[in-house]
Image 1 (cartoon, helix red, strand yellow):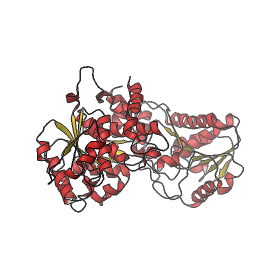
Image 2 (image 1 turned 135 degrees about the horizontal axis):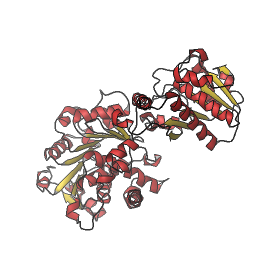
Image 3 (image 1 turned 30 degrees about the vertical axis):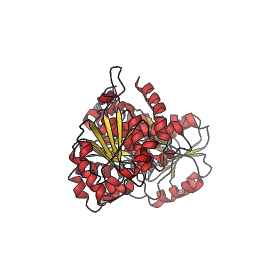
Image 4 (image 1 turned 90 degrees about the vertical axis):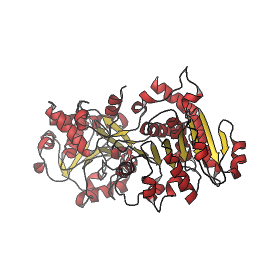
Length: 495
């Protein structure tokens, strides 16, 4: 699959971009009523494939999401399901395609109140779509609160009502769904937290919108997938040797030696031909005794890196894991950046600049990857607000570096506005040291010549895949050893 096709396949569309796609499909000859028919039918099929026939209540809103709900109700009714439909507002006030499909519904239309939930075995939430930007209120709020208290299973149309499809952020009383059916492409809010949890199982149904509308929509956000970096992934070649696979340097500190070891092993497992760990003399013996395939070098007492960096074969650099925050770390970071080589800055390499972030930003260059978690990000960018996606993009734009904002929904943002959201990380990765391994994976891929954005995207996916191989009970030490199994899975996807 070409990179262009992969981006089309794995695009995440904001509500505005999805509206554009709908309009382009209509202009291309697909009637809006047909799109709504296909959408509602897809929701009904998803329900019927997962649940036995039983009484269902369909909650409809006053817009196109409610129009989808009328179609769902009709298809379930025709399949023999006892259906009760409740509308917020009146049929007479519906407009456009929603009004046409409401007229095709032959059953009664109840007023939307909490009482319509009585005696139901399933609720279809077709009240509000992904573009809702205000809190729920009135009868809708009362009904949603009753729905949450009831524990009834919920199928949401497009997004659960009250969830922002662009940011993944819910209003306080948003619906929590067991199944969500969206259309054409997922939205960022489907994969960002906590939206991903509120959606439950997610189905993306194709409803007749042609893929070529994406050429005009030009989305810049994607769900991470090997297809996006398949063409550049540095698999070992039969005619290769270790010097062609790069030489990665990890700079370690004196107080938390395990972090630097994990990062070094991550770089080696990612395929770097050579890995050197440079540490203060006081911990050289400890690190040298613990590592075999990684070379360990003692730094001068001053911590100066000039002697190491004189070796231009060290083509990818990492500092931060286990370093501690200090002026000495700041000095080492600036030394590495002055070398103008591919550089990963993690953990304390970032937090050490909390009081003077501009000193760091001014030294960064376009071969840098920043890998903060939320706390480290806030120390550097306390002024940034908005969704996780927005904040990562703005940080990348301001610094000119790739920003990888970690979490269950890690966002990788490029300075040009492109962004990837990773969704394959299992919850077991929330353990100390796992981020050090991730930094090492990025380093190892950079050493082999990947560009920063591709290296960050591939590494975070591989990190999640390795964790999946381990499963429950995972600790960070398990991850380097799980990389070979993850790579075997990845190779099968590629070949």
